[in-house]
Length: 191
Image 1 (cartoon, rainbow, N blue to C red):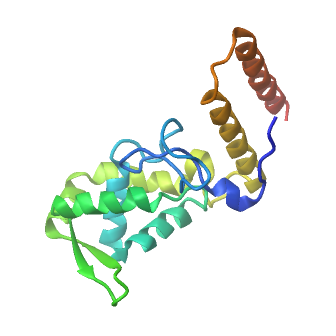
Image 2 (tube, rainbow, N blue to C red):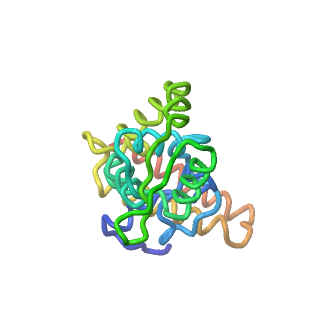
């Protein structure tokens, strides 16, 4: 079995990403793409970004950091997902953009149409914001999962993804793979 880096930083990335940023870590450790649980659900990142911008106009990086902070460092959407979503929201007329402080960074503000859309979808927006309060898989900042447990879970998920994306398993290997997972589940239940 491979051994993985065990620093807290390593576990900050979570899952592969979908085009609308609904799941995924930063991509530098995870290879992006397929699989993994969704953090916000379909279209959820749009509501989160709109709500954060409605609360306070912000640059893209500030929005990424705000999401990461609200999730206790367990997840941060990648710029490659956040910025296209912001552009989409701008094209839909929900956000306006002003050139920043000469740094080339764009500052996003919500428009009247964006406020109306948010109000019309208040239940969904509130659900997405509430979900961030609980963290990814319950790993939020309020008495959530210990960091060493989060790291171990992320290492296990990475090991499984790497093996499952490799060469096809024989029946024997599949049984052994399942047996390892079943044994781990049984031991965890005893703790």
